[in-house]
Image (tube, rainbow, N blue to C red):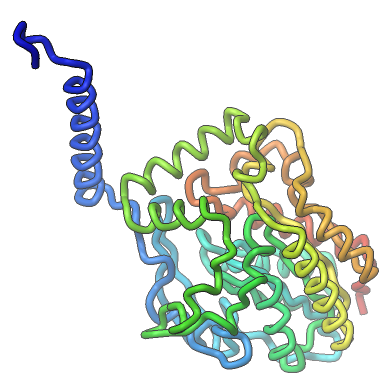
Length: 360
């Protein structure tokens, strides 16, 4: 302050910065006490280590998933799949195995609301002469490399007639660089990074690392990131920055992802199963006005063409639905029960068009 008692610009700046910091501290403490935003990513005990895949769901697990927008029960059968155990195969059985990540697995919905359960009901009604079984083989955190490892390890046991591979545009490609078999360990049923593998994801874009750290450690950051992200999506701002909003991958990661999809298709066929690649995205590609395909769509399309496999762009279909704003949790970003229903309807339509099932 000068002799006239007037604050200098530096002093004013310090007061503003100090005020902002104080407000952030108060907001952080308030959210921690009144409305927490950070929850355990997965309930304790949900996973067990697996030497071939890295980690799998714990057989017989029963717990709850909690987020700011939902809380629901999760159970795992003795076969290590979400929900009830598969029924024994009969002569008239037709078995669909869905592979994927937390989207297909069903973060945000009860066991009976997943796309797998809803698809089974739709197909059973359409083909009453067959024993329709749809198995939810998705596991949170899996990329294509992990799904391939899962199919190699469990395919002979599960004996699918059709394998549906849910590809997620946001993270499948860069997650494939470090499959779970290389980095994942389990402690008390919780996923941890195996000692000595902390550089496994060193190739990830720095903005992802920073965002993940902030959302995992600050309630205020989690609160703001989620809400600002949703507002910008609704306002169409993400149209100008699709890479930051939806995906970020290199040419090497794209080539690896394509090769893994081809290998997965070949593995499924070796089991005597047909394959359907299901391309899915985050909500920004679905809730915006007008559909703009993302770069990762080319990866799936080219892999499907090379492997001569069926594929479908779920994002393009969901974007045309009148209820598209109800298909995702606005903040969490996973499918709602309505979203799982929409995916089940799409899969039923594709399976019907492929002519794979006939009433006995």
